[in-house]
Amino acid sequence: MKHMPYTAQANRYQQMEYRRCGKSGIRLPAVSLGLWHNFGHVELLENCRAILRLAFDSGITHFDLANNYGPPPGSAEENFGRILQQDFSSYRDELIISTKAGYHMWEGPYGEWGSKKYLVASLDQSLKRMGLDYVDIFYHHRPDPNTPLEETMTTLDLVVRQGKALYVGISNYQAEEADKAIQLLKQLGTPCLIHQPKYSMFERWVEDGLLDVLEKDGVGCIPFSPLAQGLLTNKYLQGIPANSRAAKPHGFLQESQVTADKIDKVRKLNELALQRNQSVAQLALAWLLKDPRVTSVLIGASSTAQLQDSLQCLQNTTLSAEELAAIELILKS
Ligand SMILES: NC(=O)c1ccc[n+]([C@@H]2O[C@H](COP(=O)([O-])OP(=O)(O)OC[C@H]3O[C@@H](n4cnc5c(N)ncnc54)[C@H](OP(=O)(O)O)[C@@H]3O)[C@@H](O)[C@H]2O)c1
Image (tube, rainbow, N blue to C red; front, side, top):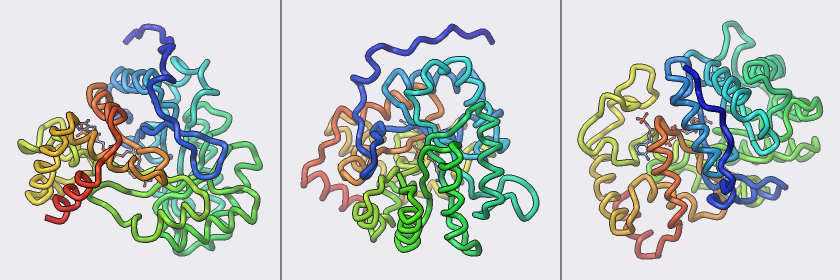
């Protein structure tokens, strides 16, 4: 399909809040966009394009990818690369593009986890798929219990020295192993920029130590699945819609995760959100952004309407002590 040439909105930077990422020189938008779902070859490219254009027009400068995003794996990077070249090539220096390696990407012993062999090859593949000379952030996607942490961190340092990544991050590392990785990177002279953990009203393990470690070490935090893959929205209040992640065969959210208990909580959160003139998605994002240790919330969106809705969280990120207490009661009910 032929698309209109793109020129970014002139006022895009007035619409977004930018937060310093740990103790680094980088500021990230309070809302970042992830391409895990909704950007693979199974999707319509024009919908991907519309979401990316709206994001950038709204001040979202940070786009998060990984080698395996699709389906099929690799196709989100390919589609992003295509749209980048067609629409955003003159804006490259205004973008923070991240990718990751850690999960299964190709057959054999060198296609996943944390070896130097895998990480170097995977980043080279990602750069090729996206048509980039470098990414802004390269992450180790998950800890590897069998590869020495020194090997993995030395490789992150190496790709920065090679100019293939400007910064590095870690994802899904528990507090103690994150601290070790951060210290190793510091010794190597490539400080860890950011940690990417799963964090939402429904998933709060980071509050038991990780956030303290990141604060102590001056590392940013970008929670993924802040809407619990769509559960923390009004999407499932009347059952499971056919166009939802839970209903799609390639969706990572299982129908069995849409439990009556969760939906009951969302219903109560929705009432509280409405009193604040917010959607429940906006409340869930504002609740994360209340913590100054959270640099940016990393959302997904399957439509421009969803992105527009989620972005409105920025209109009200203040929560009173009473509201916070009411949320705790709901989450514990
Ligand atoms: N590091 C890691 O291991 C890891 C793991 C997972 C994700 N991530 C990153 O985090 C990003 C976000 O993850 P996520 O997609 O699970 O985040 P999410 O924001 O929790 O969920 C996004 C999904 O929720 C639904 N949704 C979003 N906004 C909505 C709204 N305003 N109203 C109603 N429904 C809405 C949509 O689902 P429908 O499709 O049902 O419409 C959308 O695809 C990923 O793209 C990826 O970059 C990283």
